Amino acid sequence: MVGLLQQIRQTIRRERLLPPGARVLVALSGGADSVALTHVLLELSEHGGFSVVALAHFNHQLRPTANRDEEFCRSLASGLGLDFEVERADVAGYARSQRLSVEDAARRLRYAFLERTAGRRGADHVAVGHTLDDQAETVLLKLIRGAGPTGLGGISPRKGLIVRPLLEVTKQDLTAYLSDRGIGWMEDETNGDLANPRNRLRQVGLPELERTYPGATRAIARAGDSVRTDAEWLDRTADTLFRAVTHETATGLELDAVRLTAEPRAIVRRVLLMALRVVGGHREIGLDHIRAAEDVLDRSCGGTDVPGARLELQREKLVLSKAGALLK
Image (cartoon, rainbow, N blue to C red; front, side, top):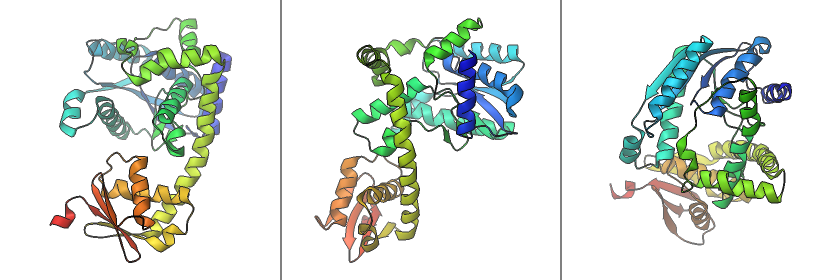
């Protein structure tokens, strides 16, 4: 257990997740990962220079046991002498109204709640319980879907207010930590639903890989970390170029095609992705859409339609117009 705490402490220090004086809100679902995160951060905070200000639970109202989990989290916070914040939402209804998957809707509502709660509590960081196993699962799922380097980088240790101190430890490590201390947690009964791609990978795919190639989970997560560091540099470079070549118009964006085509393909694709997301209202953009935009940029075709936008090359400008704007 000392090794586990030391590993998490090293992650926090190396990634600069919780600097001295940090005030952290902990996202608590009731599952083993978030319960372990709560106890670990309380232990490390004694000499880590940061403080845990409250626990926050988001009730998705998607499972029959959702209220049970909420009460468990409330009781845990009370037993630890910590303030507790909770919010309930009709995730399924929100998903239908916004035409989102339930998973996407749940994530958006949950993180919005956590950011609002952090503001109320004066927290400058929100800790969530993603583990090394979650990282490996994410990298594999992205690979299966044909993602590029940014997707294959998996889960970032730090993004805005969100920090993930557990990314280098396994679920097995965490459940052993809890069992050693006699600490209970709640099980999510939907984790056994193999119709869910992540559950199927977690219950079947990764265990089979581990049997055939011992250490595969850790190696996949490590590869994701390596890809992520490279992708972050590429993204920063692309963001700088995007700002330099882009001009906002009444109907969308114009990009300097001459300057853009002089850049390496890896950077060009990132700039096109940024532009498509801005004009398309942050709709889901895939590689096929980026390639279609490249064809216009390379003069292989005169124009193309992608989710939420129309692209055309006009003289030396790549013009992106919001869908329907040309009809007005």
